[in-house]
Length: 446
Image 1 (tube, rainbow, N blue to C red):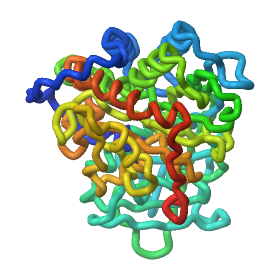
Image 2: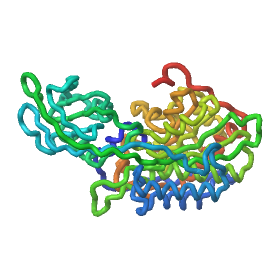
Image 3: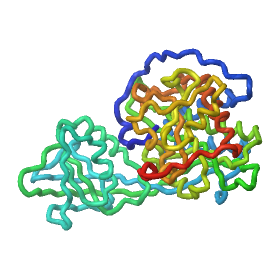
Image 4: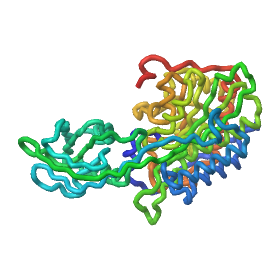
């Protein structure tokens, strides 16, 4: 969920808590999404054989194949210009193998440095021009925030990290040791992170390494339900979620698979169930795009590629669905909308839910900056009323990015109620009766 940065996926493991669930209220008798579809799809996506659906890994490919089959079953059409439901694009993986790192005349032992390079063969010394930038990260600095741009080097940089940050440094080293994907081919620069203090006097160093750079094909899964009103063919409505998760983690009680049932098999399940629902309704004046994004967990690359293929002026709304598998802090039959004050998207959903037992509330966690941490953000920055709908109590969610985010932790009846409420509240937008206001001004440029 919510892409702060890929490194956050390594923050701690938690055991399975005892979930205190209230009994969900029953929905009115009007048709809703199919509960059987909801359970079947979320169980398939969060199964052990998906291996945590890490982008670029076989489990994510298997999940994408499953979603393609679902879109075919429902009877969606491919996005114009694509031969099928897969929207493929390249990313790059760079794995650096250090051979020797010396700083101040002393060899830096493994575990006390991290080297990131876009140079196939690196032989870097202190007298090379241009001289590297030298950065110091103190005990009170946010290591993750400070090094984020440095992990895709655009200039030669050496970073000295205070030893009080050794635990965070270890997580960084572990993540980088597994390799990482990036949207652009690595530039011929390097970043060296050293756990320790910079030597006094002029800095002398020698670094030798090799880097293997390869291209990896990723894919979004996109299906279209054409609009019934040809005059509204340039008024697209998007329903989206990310199908990737973080793969595997160090084993806890013998379990190493981070299944990602809530994050975000729950949201992806909603996309499938909503596609099935609106196909059966046959009432959408506007064209509907159903999108399962890849690579949200490692930087939102899938959403970025998707957005570049569209004219944002032709998108009237984006319903991004993220972690709806548990009850919200407002209780059963409720969900919150991020960026509630940035357009009238949220107030419209509130208005459309009036008279029902369901409530859409404003994001209760503004300090988390969730609006700009999920796949809605790319189109939101372009002015589209693109918002995320969620129920996750993220400040206290002990299952987030752990091996215990499994289907058994979900409240499936409430999850089905959330998806049904989205379908009903979206109807006036889908049918062309409502158009949310655009996101404008500086907020759209963040």
